[in-house]
Image 1: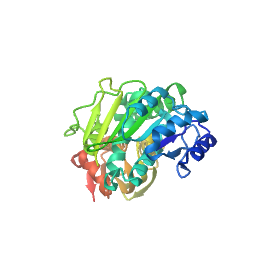
Image 2: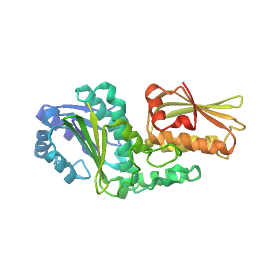
Image 3: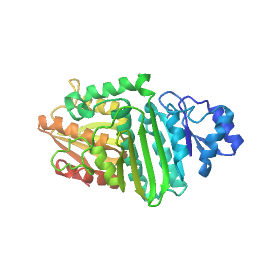
Image 4: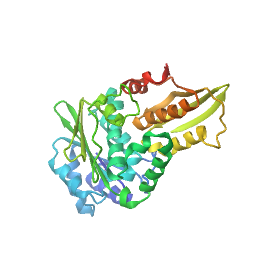
Length: 239
Length: 106
């Protein structure tokens, strides 16, 4: 499955879908991305790499819809058994409709058992939230934890979402099949995610502790991996 | 996320529905201001009850809002109750050890 949006004309995607005989779906049931473009998907099945490569013939280079084209090309070139590839802006990732679409797609195609949907979606939503807020938008979460400063935190988030310098930074999400099940990865283009507490985070005494998101990831996934540069989170799910 | 608030004696009941995630920070802000802001029409409550029965999905940001509300409620001597969480939401509350600081009514 390939998701395109973020300014790519729907007519271009329709042309590609028709010529390559892949199904296109416009998610009209979901709100558009913050920049107003609809979220459309191409159901590529195991022809993902082919569709990406062929897209260039239609003037759609891999990543032309993406703010981070080199990461998209690297992921597609390197990953065996790739089931999903998605590269969008932080502002689109912030509204999370695509995580829902991806989860449903993987369930419909049998890659993800239904009883794992919730945990899968939760863990990836948490990883994307971190990548958007603490990574690309470079917002320290400290203010979020204090009632008096929460309003300031929200205003800062909204300000950065409206600022293209932050909002256009790239997020990359991929899912591939591995021996034990599924391996999802979330990359953020800039910034570094905060150093997480031990996974699962201990919240015995202080439910205000930072890292609650990592605790939920740890509870939902078989394994959580964090790259040395703290720009990529890997999540392994038994499926 | 949608929410509605009603006073029932000294109980403030907040019905949450649909998804409660980090993408709803603006609604969180509105909700907190509606409860604790200077213009709030809700006065004298001794309990805030979050009815979660219609919540379809929640993430750590959503859980964080309950903590924020509890922190403010503690200052005015009010208790926070999380009522009827669906199964998956209940699992998350358990992972986050929320039973230690909230009353959870199934």
